[in-house]
Length: 467
Image 1 (spheres, rainbow, N blue to C red):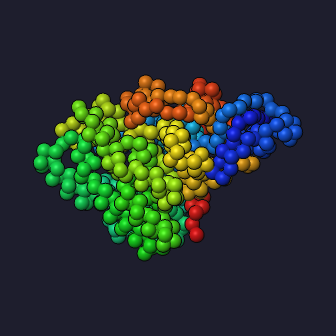
Image 2 (cartoon, rainbow, N blue to C red; image 1 turned 180 degrees about the vertical axis):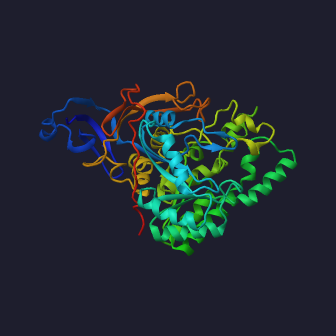
């Protein structure tokens, strides 16, 4: 039985076009687009018609950096795949790429299988996996080839967190050399963790224990230094590089320089670095702990450089690094010692709306909004044009977006499984109204009509930007 839906009267926005068009969906895919009011569009019949007059019709968001159920610092991220993907849908995101973790001493396969078990049957929207590589050895390197073949085409390494996820330069170089051969993409957490650990120890010895010192010890220069080093190692290996959660202007400058040299180097930033700052980390009564993440929030002057990087394409993607920990009982583990505060912020539900606010504020264009939140992450991680656009043949992951609606962000009304909002009280213009995932209604006029298990695992091809 075929099922058809028509979306009528909206402004269809993709990374490349804006057109007043009707959209025909058939059997979970986009079947056709036709200019609204034309005889071609009027001739379409369907079981379901959605009126999008006065609204935007945009591709579902692709959030290429989430951490559902991630064990960290003696606790676990508070969103499950069920709660996290439901919240993502509420925020207009229809695909996440989460991080499976290889623990030291484990194979990549064991880590990947564990994450498949967490996600399978629980997701409201589609999902894929990156692989965190914590233990580079000959077996791991061979496994990387196998994972690329089965659609896990990106591997994350850490220059931070010695003793947990950390890889030294030799291990990083070996993994990069392997990815140069197998087509994989190395994603780098670029901070000099060895130096940071020294600064943490010294700060605590001086009695500097409040959350704000988390930002002070994780210096912007140590992000820039690690970014530079990662670029040079990738250059030696002849491998592409994707630097995650770029927060500092000095790191943006390193990426810009590498891209000016024609290197396959890419950068991602996150809403927290665009909208929050060290002022939040310094909030009294331990409230600053809510904003502890790594890389850390920076002083406000960095924000303009990040927005500029997004406009000039020195930064290509905005992901969330969604890794929520409740204030009560989780963030509080670090009272009296900032180094024990679990690192991470909730944000999977807020990204599309915050970036629309950036359109309203004049920081980016409407098409750039869709480019950095939908199309580029889909291309970067081998899912385009199945994901990230509205075009015949694409999955019918579609959001009806009301650009006039006003909302106030609050933990009272969000759907993430966490007891605070990083953007509490922020007024935003624009709101998700209806969300379809592969043609099925997940959010229907601000009501959740989806279900756990609708979301399916999405194997990925390799990065579509490599020259």
